[in-house]
Length: 416
Ligand code: HGY
Ligand code: MN
Ligand code: MN
Image (cartoon, rainbow, N blue to C red):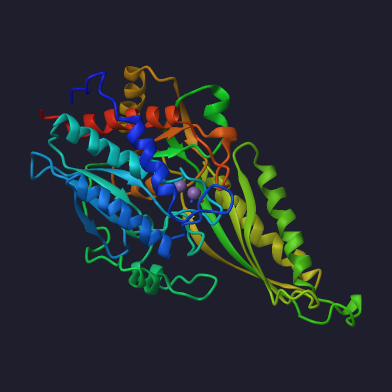
């Protein structure tokens, strides 16, 4: 395939304006976003994205998990489409760019091709994956996991949030349960532009990350069960405090990850204490351990050590420990041909770049199991993400989207 002309670029201002307009939906309390999946704010964001896709002449398809696929036709009706996208849902204290940059950069590619009247042999499909974050309904990357055949659709429908609401019911309630069978779509390739969510690119002074691999993930939902009783009148020797078990497992998770440095991370981000009353000793604590590594053996060893050691630590304080694996994907190695195309595009465009392993999980990690996939990354300030203070610069967004444009076009084959 011939590479697109060096001077072909997206409209960086239009991309930035679209990101800022999307950021007005589901505002956070500190300048970021709280647009959690399948909330009314998510529905509002979907409607805005849909209106932009319609204005760009795209045809929208929606599958049974609510994932949105906006198609720009190619010249060859038999050519499999090139997909490009990410996610519009955010963390409860999320930033304006996590996921949104990738979806709107895909739309910006279409807008640029429309402006220039460029036609491609393969169709191009801009994609918004449902529930990438997994914060309201665990696990993360839920829709792309079902699409890749790693998770069952009906299991996904049954996932419940903290208020006991079912994923399937909420998807129906916001009107985005589509007719398309999940996974029925075939892809020529999938590209995802995403902020790095870590400090490396900014520290190295690079504008673009050429993502070669990603970390694998294991989410282990743990339950520690003691006995609820009066914090005042229960003698210390009689207490079975689930809160003490949580403290011990929190430290254990940190120690396990530290054993495998520099190729491992571990933390507990989600914690529900029951009954969570100031004067009742915690009866039960439900929490999720998040282990990550780009080395599969390390990932598996960390889970094994947790499940071997935690029960004894908890039993020592009279508390029972149980666990369930609720989220997983193995470390992805992205498609070498597409990775090389991204690297060559950055070179051609004159952007400084480096190869990088994604620390965060992305929908691309699941799609990579079934179709040729890769990612492009842009730096983020101080490496901060999953925090309302998440920031990137318009130049970083533009550089990433320019590289994405060239890699997508080379893969979709420019006809005229
Ligand atoms: O958890 C993740 O890595 C992603 O940001 N949802
Ligand atoms: Mn993301
Ligand atoms: Mn995220």
